[in-house]
Length: 79
Picture 1 (cartoon, rainbow, N blue to C red):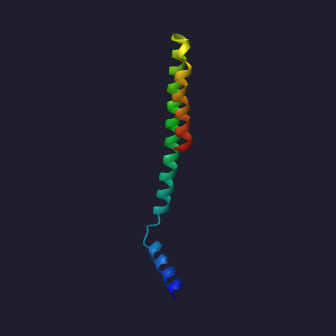
Picture 2: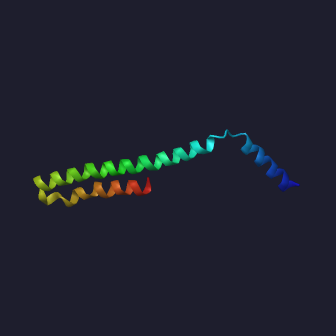
Picture 3: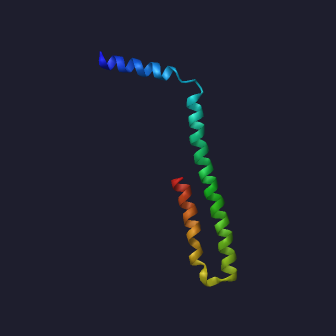
């Protein structure tokens, strides 16, 4: 009786949610993934432009400026 009562309660619990709530949650997850990867691409582009300018003006300090590109890639993976 305890298991049947718990299942009955969960069925009623789901019945209280509106029909569009699930799709709204999935849209939030998709928006988070898209915006995270878009921000990572933007950061990689900006850091790449900066690296090219640094390579032209100060060729010896190029390797120090690779770190922002790697970090922007990490944001896309773990975002």
